[in-house]
Image (cartoon, rainbow, N blue to C red; front, side, top):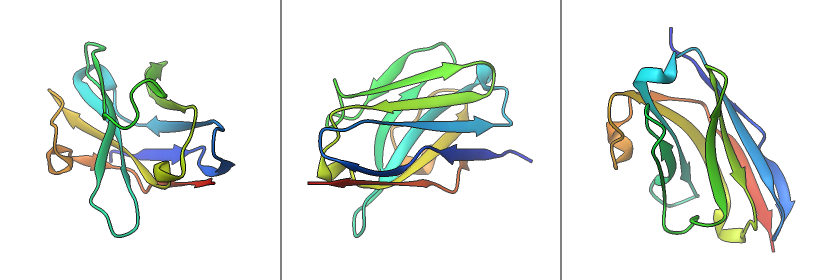
Length: 120
């Protein structure tokens, strides 16, 4: 059974930093991995993805502030710096076999999410 388990969320002041982790049972050399987020009343938004080959993409709102990376065979990270109140939301680790889709609906596997709250 595929598992994606996020951790590292919390509450932080604007301008602060957090690092999210995703432990997975997937052998992600063949998978696209990424992070989506959802704020209350809003649709899920792509934050960052990393392909099986290591290519990364970022949502426009987080470019230059967030960094996605992989470490070991089964841990995915999202380093979030210069956090803003609009970064508040539930952050989900996602995965799909093959290429990285742009849409949330393209991802097969989802974690339970970890809450990030940024106070102004």
